[in-house]
Image 1 (tube, rainbow, N blue to C red):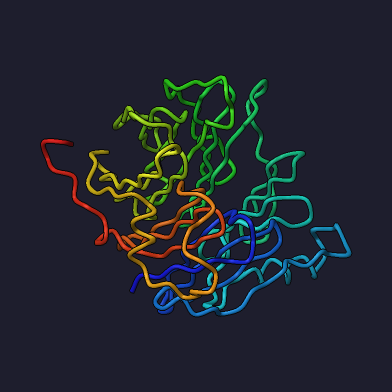
Image 2: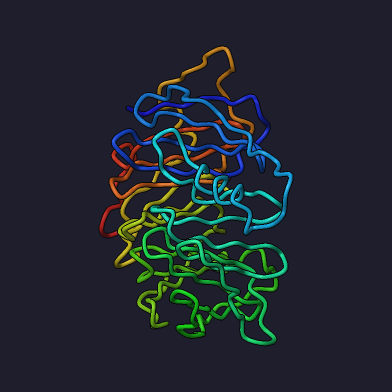
Length: 303
């Protein structure tokens, strides 16, 4: 079932689809506030404000209890949480975490924390943690890909991308760390864990929101100007499905009619998708959960 709901917040900052027997949609409306919805029917499962901790020692037992409690109602760990002035990224099993403290990146494996040593003269402007394997990938100011396996450097690789706007440089990782997507906002380059370029996609639009399924089989993108959403085959980067986000939302069941019809934007700001093609996206304060089956197949000739 597809559905949409207007939230009483001006913007939705992040969406996570936490797959389990009951898949939960985690919707961040503030850096420290997350709302939980049942993916099947849109019922609200509660919300949480990430508490401010009265201590800073990460060896404190209370820190461990805090980390172990960063879960959705279906007991899945939240992928990214901001707390204690840091970003905490966590794998699905909670065994590995990446702590971005602002002063450095720390990888925690089974409770043991180590500083990730970045190549001298390099500054990472985008970092991701693979939810399955715990592999860490990052992009530096020169558009180079940094790949870590556990605490060790696996390599630094040229992507062929560069941008004067560092905010356009982004990275995604999937398939246990074996598939890495990097972008400068105008192109997408798919690489493997050894830094080999597998595919390159030249976009005819400015890339807005984007996301990759955990198994790497689907890449979703949003056009930053028109609001068209597209799904690409994650192996070939060939376009498979597309549709305007506003039309996808219009087709979805409206859960709170009194909130009005029109979103404050027709361009998706954030999105997430599952291996099975469940797609969640936000336009301003409007949350929509839909499916790739609601999109239009791209004819082979057009692709």
